[in-house]
Image (cartoon, rainbow over all chains, first blue to last red; front, side, top):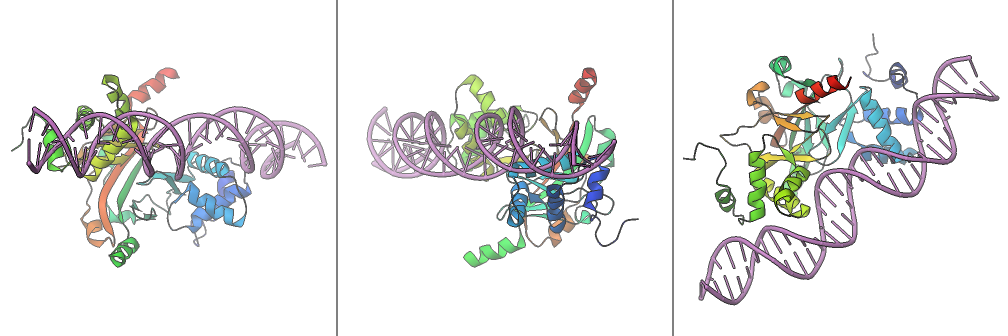
Length: 152
Length: 152
DNA sequence: CCTTGAATGCAATATAGTTGCATATCGTAG
DNA sequence: CTACGATATGCAACTATATTGCATTCAAGG
């Protein structure tokens, strides 16, 4: 059984289990995402990492791509131009909808229960292969709403 | 009452009602989208239009932006890098999920009933402003599945 | 340690979308 | 029908995001 402090802590093991080399950059990317309450863009991650030590942004893209491929991360489309990345859903961390603020560009995780949905019919009848179901709510977050009022 | 042949035929009136000038390019964009079974990217639309007569791609972007702003079109994020555009939902054409094939890049509309969902709780309790709810299923479409088998 | 394949860095390139400004077209007043 | 002002379009340059090719460095197993 896993530790109950945080569902994803042993990132090295996570990488090893996936047959991936354990490198500082990969661990750092995972730590940044684990420390974030919400999915981040490649740019966000690169900027964060660059504060402690230099990493090439291409490396960040490649790490993200690789980790998504191996199911360690998931890639979400925001309502904007950049993808956002978060730790992949698993049993401790079930799939859930996201909120994207079109004013500040921040993405937030919503509770899985906030938008109950039944996928059985779809999964049974869909004639193709279903890999992922993404639900995104776009709008203005509480913070931005407040700022907008102050500006008036 | 509207004609019952197609929910959106009088595009000129649609534009006029929105206070927008009726131009050939705008009508052509709307016709292309009306004629398509699925949402198209700006590139798709530009290529289609270019077959009959030349339009600048910037013009296509600007038309799409404007029509989205006025609620005539809606902009969807695909699982890829390009946004897709379709006629906006209305009473004849309710909101519905979309399917994105990660192999061929085609987007398809699904029936609103295929993924029943209750948004009342979310709408009542969400602390920000909700403008749009987008549901996208990613996977491989029937056609591509077939092709993949043949290639094996 | 060494070796080897994978990871990283760097530069160039690709793709999608945006901006500034000059010209053409739409819609309306006359 | 014509002319005029507002808006749409074209064109070129630019931005943001992501990807590729190739040389160098590093991780993992002997």
